[in-house]
Image (cartoon, rainbow, N blue to C red; front, side):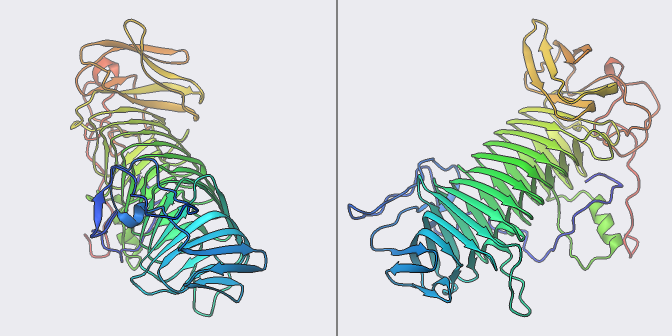
Amino acid sequence: MKKNKNKMSIWLMAMAMSMAIVGCSNAKTATTAAATTTQSTEAVATNTSAKTTASYSEEDLNTSYSDSDTKIELSSGNAKITGEGASYTDGNIVITKAGTYVFSGEFNGQIITEVGDEDLVHIVFNGVNITNTTSSVINAATGRKIVLTLVDGTTNTITDGTTYNYAEGEDEPDATLFVKQDLTINGNGTLNISSNYATALKAKDNLIILGGKLNIESVGKAIKGTDSVTIENADITINVEDDGITTDGALVINSGTIKMEKVGEGLEAVTIDINGGTIDIVASDDGINARGLIDDSATDEEKEAYGEENQADTYFRITGGTVNVTAGGDGIDSNGQVYIEGGTLNVSGPASGPDVALDYNGKATITGGTFVSTGVQEMFESFDSSSTQNFINVFYSTAVSGGTEVKVTDKSGNVVLSYTPTNDFTAVILSSDKLVTGETYTVSAGSNSEEITISAGENTIGEQSSGMGFGGGNGTPPSGAPGENGGTPSGNGSMGQPPEKPTDANGN
């Protein structure tokens, strides 16, 4: 979050910061799909074909089902149930015991769990189209965990209405697919979620998505796991009015494809780790937002002060994968730290301030990978001096139009890195392990072209315009000589002192 900019989201602190990300006491290192259980010749098993990279429990990886499991064949006004543990009651399917339940067909109504606190319910979608105009489609308010398997080759659709009918004093469920505890989604089928009331997909504890093709449209948020969200091997497309993927804890993306074609904020969590995959974000607000939590009972002054602090345990980190961000707000916004350690990250920041392409309260370092950001000079921030990979800050005296390629070529004319941003820009940050100290490169954007010989660490082309922000967006320009190559130093900590933070009600 930008210094002196009151746009911090306020979040509850009730959850413990040491929340688990994935797995449980019986977790294993999963390098292959779960073993197939013994089944009859007529049984169908859909085990996740893609390998996982992290540790998950056997139940998270299990996509198997058999003829001995309960089958629920849905029709417009009825349901044929073969097996135990489920009933058709008041137009809804009620699950009352742990087990595996295989759903197929079309239905108007709701799937409800009424099971014990330690029970695991395995729901298998084998081609369903379920609509509920008065509430959520799945209301799993009981049980230890829901595992939802999407059968290979099937298309499954769930749709809710624009209003929910609640009992007096109740406000849940509040999502088309609602789980009050842990939720895991696996398999390789398709799940379409049309959410017309609030959030599309919500787990109030930990959410793990290990496969499937998810297409989400929502008037609210797309995906929320309150304690954590972990994603691998999934193909997710999001078009929503509010946030794309959010959690009050840790967000980890290890692989898969995520396309956020329309979101408010893209990725939002206390800590965000991207270790692989391909992620495209088009956000009206922040593209990636790592933010801390503060008790909502705090005063406005305390909240404001907290928003300006370096929240030490909050960070955004990328070690692999490819991420493309186009943002109307900050491209990357961290109330704590930013670590660029690998992968490729391209950011088209806003065309006007005070939002910027890179915004942080603590430190931002680049030690690996490829990074290109474009934005404005106002409140400009770049990487700090502890970075071990060379980077170039470029300032233009007039705006460069969106759609113009930014390119770095070596002395032989080979392209070292390039990016074509969507939005207009006056400032660029470029970094790659191919920027070798002592070598000369040409940086071009449209008719703008400039040679630069790389020094270790920070390098600058052009001059940052007066009044457009300096030194990580925190201070005033210093006196003395301009930076190397005729530019003004701009790395965080290179310029002046930050302004005093607001004080809270106790003068702290």
